[in-house]
Length: 375
Ligand code: C2E
Ligand code: SIN
Ligand code: SIN
Ligand code: FE
Picture 1 (cartoon, rainbow, N blue to C red):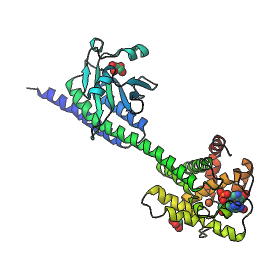
Picture 2 (cartoon, rainbow, N blue to C red; picture 1 turned 30 degrees about the vertical axis):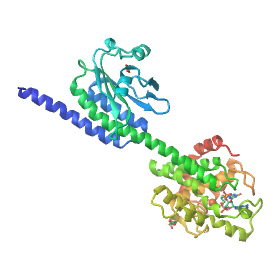
Picture 3 (tube, rainbow, N blue to C red; picture 1 turned 90 degrees about the vertical axis):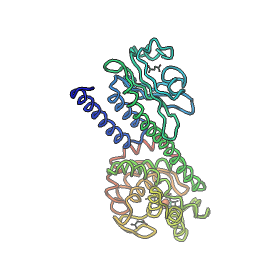
Picture 4 (cartoon, rainbow, N blue to C red; picture 1 turned 180 degrees about the vertical axis):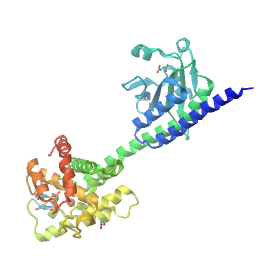
């Protein structure tokens, strides 16, 4: 029988752990980026397992190796073989393991200790298996603060591991999707404009300019990320414009320009009615990026705040890039001259708040311009 005192101690000890679990679940659920996810897992696991270091090894399908970056006391990213060491054993066998005297365990690989000068005295390693059954890596705790690891640590470790595994899987998927999405948007937008002199770099530049201006204006991260993807689709409606007009190496006649203006409506028609936020935003941008703040733009002559803010931002980014680029109908302007034109048109063509943010972001914008050079 446990004494009152002992029982009280065990309950309060586990109460603390349960609180740590809640905190972990809450924090890990709020992170998307893989590095952030790994850091939350490592920090929580270190507290829950009450040990000196925690490393999370993530399986890389392409190299068939396990890599870790977030290891307490280890700065650089290291990669280990999927069947070497305690970590490799746990990964391959999908079984958790406690090793309280590693130097007498043949599975232990003392190489990391040799490299870092650290002395491993006890190890707990748990496979990171998702709900759907795939093993995404291994969570390893090193050097229990008092004594060695015990069975209770295994239980806590395994509860933690399920949630950690799913968070890691989601973060990896999220990053892949994000990269695919960015690339698809750029490739399709460029495909839509391949007849025009528009280049991949133009789309990258105006997308990043829009992002930087939005950031400067204080929009939240996820909105700015959406704008970064929506902006490059602004001229997708040029698909519907005849070569004779689109490729004309001279000034357009009034009639031709009337035809050209329709690229805003064509773009809107392509993108509208989607339930996807980014495409909704892109349809507003396509429709309204040639509207002017004073109401003299097209296609509808909207003024001021009637023009969606995403379109007011893209208008500045687009014109700045058009001004600093060569077009079949014009030579590029110097950066200083382009900035003067934007400033001069503040309150007329452009929203003054956007122009102000543009000027603040200018050093960053110029870096982008230099990096994705004007062709
Ligand atoms: P774009 O070449 O990408 O230009 C986008 C916008 O940048 C223009 O919208 C305009 O607001 C601004 N912009 C471009 N060049 C200049 C410039 O030299 N000075 C000033 N102040 N602003 C400039 P806009 O005028 O509504 O034109 C939309 C699209 O129509 C242009 O896209 C281009 O594809 C076409 N376009 C416009 N004018 C001509 C032209 O004279 N000849 C030909 N071939 N195409 C033209
Ligand atoms: C092992 O997996 O055998 C040891 C790895 C480590 O010390 O981090
Ligand atoms: C649009 O959604 O079509 C443009 C936004 C507006 O009309 O204010
Ligand atoms: Fe346009």
